[in-house]
Figure 1 (cartoon, helix red, strand yellow):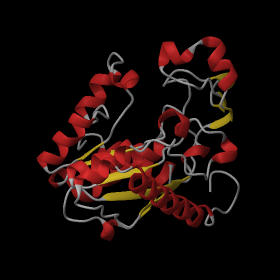
Figure 2: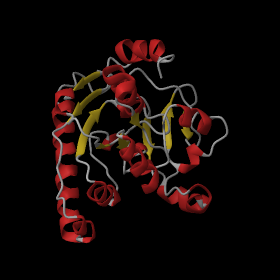
Figure 3: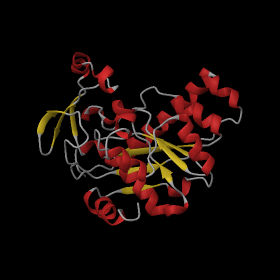
Length: 256
């Protein structure tokens, strides 16, 4: 992380013109950050969050990103992710990080979130996945919602390609319900299925760390569907409100 900061400082400050607010809201104890991430397989809003966290806290407070098993098992790419502290989003991995006193960030929406259509670029998509709430309850850690906009302007998703994904049987082959058609550089309009198929465009990324959500200490509530649903709706609403605020600062439809 330290060796790469020279490059990432330039990317964050000049290419993506990153703005991050809300550092004062981070509790002293380990937290589970929950947010959205955009831009297909190269989610620059996720990477800039991880590197800005390192820039802010340094080695004193490591943050573990999480990545899909397909990426973690990829030759060389998976090795690189692991060296960067990225972990597979399995319960045992995340709990082990908390036990060390580290922080973890999850993007529950996964590929449905990262490949949402450009028309949904300012919409919070958590995919209806609520396991992170049960995990936070059982681990006894607060949840810090993260709002971000701009990442979806680094890659234009023209269509999520759900019918095409079914025809190609991508659910069985790649655990994906999507076969996104994108507009990107340098290949223009294309079916987007590989991580290194495009170079992210220089969109402005705005991120805000929101107020932490403290959950009940009663671990039995992890099995209470009504409680889990209410927390999920609250967190999704907080992220959406934050994204709305950030999107209102946009000067032009894209890049600014």
